[in-house]
Amino acid sequence: MKRIAARDRVMIDRARKKGPARTLVAGAAGPEVLRAVADAAGFGLIRPVLIGRAPAIRNLARRLNIELSEFRIIDRTEDPDIAETAAEMASRNEADLIMKGNISTPVLLKAVLDPRFGLRTGGLLSHIAWMEVPAAAKPFAVTDSGMIIRPTLEQKILILKNAIAFTSAMGIRKPRIALLAANEKVSPHMPETADAVELVRMAAEGVFGEAVVEGPLALDMAFSSDAARIKGFRSRIAGKPDIVLVPDIASGNIFAKGLVYLAHARISGLVVGARLPIVLISRAEHASTWLHSLALACIVSPKIGSLRFS
Image 1: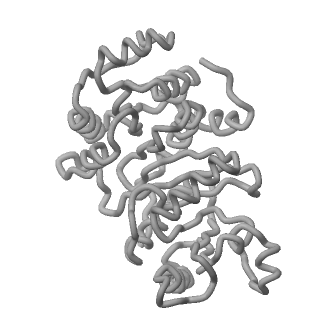
Image 2: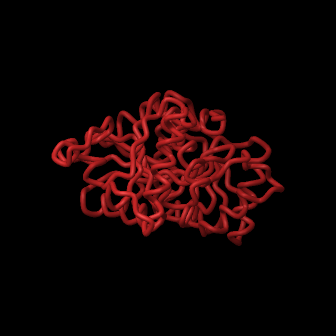
């Protein structure tokens, strides 16, 4: 078990107070995945069940000097079998969260969405990237940067409700939500601008609870109070958003990864809206990012799925 980096300590200590979460690791035969799982278990965050090719998992653990004697291993060879085993165990309430390891994302999500396992809650599954950016005033959620390719207005409503439930679980009672677009003007050529106007109207009617919703907003307006002042825009969220709704998966993915690789941001990724959160980030991420995502999932696991909006 490694030492906790200074910027991880608060998150990990908070997750540790929840007690170890029963965690299904779908596709455990990956170096960064296995390192993160071992660290998370060592910190008391999770009790993992490793699902995948058992010989490969054990060989990898020996090479990495990771002790597996206290971990349960379920031998499955093919990705569909790994995914369905995780979904079936979750359906029997044998887990608090699922972690996507060295397995195809579409294959895992297909199993999670399979009606046989009853993991859907009746809403929409969406992805949340929790961003900690050194230059930002505080962490914020970017959604949806990993699931819905081009969300409709109806899907954006559900994406926002998922994100509000997530931030509520993180202790944010009145989230500030920025609806991103290229600029603040409504244009028939940019449907996200018209969607933003409708979402703001719905927020005024109480559809999103106590959330403060503004848009359409260009990126500078969302993250700079000076930009809002210069443009003469009176904003309650400029410079301090809690949730950033992106127009589509391409812009969200580019935005989040740009922050990681160019602004030294820490990213954690979850799929929410199911009966339990699913840790889902890029396979290119390091073990520390997987560990941080596991800590985040532990924090929100008791809440996601239990908060509902009319």
